Image (cartoon, rainbow, N blue to C red; front, side, top):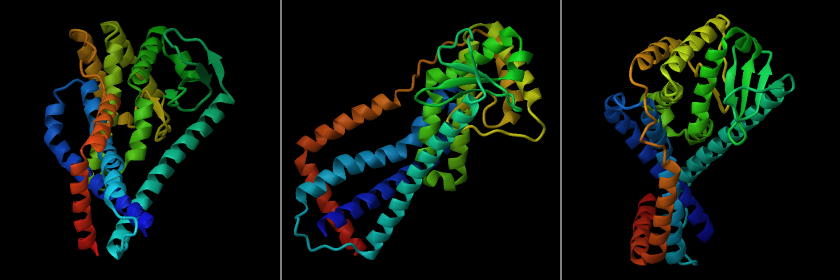
Amino acid sequence: MYELLGICLALAVLLTINTAASIFVAAGWRFFEAPLRKKSARVRADILFAMRACPPTIAMISVGFFLIPSYVGYEPYSTNEVVSKKLAALAILSTGGVLFAVWRGLRSWFATRSLLREWLAVADQITLAGVSIPAYRIPHSFPIIAVVGTIRPRLFVAEQVQSTLSDEELIAAIAHERGHLTARDNLKRSLLRVCRDVLMIVPCGRALDRAWADSAEAAADEYAAQQSSETALDLASALIGIARMVPTGKRTRLPAAAFILGDDTTGVRARVKRLIALAGARPPKASAFVSHFGSIVLVVLLAALIFTLTCTHALASLHSAVERVVQLLA
């Protein structure tokens, strides 16, 4: 019973904290949405990613560094407590959420591998200026120019794109994709798919995901525009040309991939207007706000570990609080 009770408690707390943090983030997005519009696209994308990844991160840190140590340290092995129906229901619901997240991650990984095999089977490797990753030309009905993959990304360009765009437009489009590579947007996109939780059942949660995707595309445009005003205009021209090649009524969904038109081709007009504005203004500088989410998490983990090893009184108090919650659920 000791092990079963500990597992059920961990799962229930994981679900509870993740849900509470998700609701808090959803409410916070309403508050921050307007001020964020005044920030650069890179800053918006970084903040939005941090907001989306925070709920499950906070939940896992809370369980791994606080709940489990307090339970192992202060719960007697010969406990008489039992797993109540309410606690079991929370644990089952949490287990379903964890398994669903794992399934989403595996599905995205297998879909990406399948897509890579399909495209590589008909691809010709090419050399493109300014591209440090493997680049391939493929025959495709859709005007593909995309970076596919997270750990070992590859650039794919459809034949009609390479033959239709001018050299300057192609270089600008590649600069856009390089912006995605620099920001590790494919990895972030994969993580966000795994992190989808209670936020996705409320309208503002879905809006948060769309806002990150739009900001990531705008940030890659800004990255290309940093090269020069001419590059910004060439990218605007390339977007128009690629949008015109899209077959009527057809859309494409790429797993773990950064497609130059983004997830929604209807936003091309706004992006073109912004690129023209960037070309006529002072070239934007690289964002001072660099995504340090991984570093922040590492610092928090280290602080949590130090707390766990030194603050035994706090862990004892936490265990007492958990005991009261178990009694309420009985």
